[in-house]
Length: 128
Ligand code: SF4
Ligand code: SF4
Image (tube, rainbow, N blue to C red):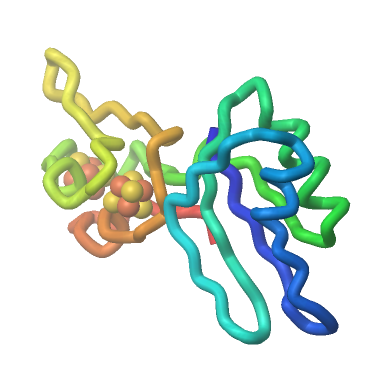
């Protein structure tokens, strides 16, 4: 399960990820991270059965945690099944079914935004 973790670094540099791994024993897969001197935003992947424990530990450390279940959203009224998103997505989120209708596996999304830019019909958006 993917979790988007955001935290402030003002007033201290609490190592949120390391603290949670140590406290819970859960191995955390970091898929994307942007951390500067003020704040951090980290996309992590954890086993579904450990997600609640990880969320609790990170929130206790002062982080905000958002569970990403529908990270990428498609407007079905705008989508024309052109396939542009299929080729640009690095995570294989999009695929065609046997009738050439677009299917989404949103749980794989790492919020890179490439599909949003590539879609010629502005049919896609991702969580902010
Ligand atoms: S790029 Fe946009 S219009 Fe084309 S298949 Fe993907 S979501 Fe649909
Ligand atoms: S945001 Fe990136 S990873 Fe997510 S569906 Fe779009 S292209 Fe794929």
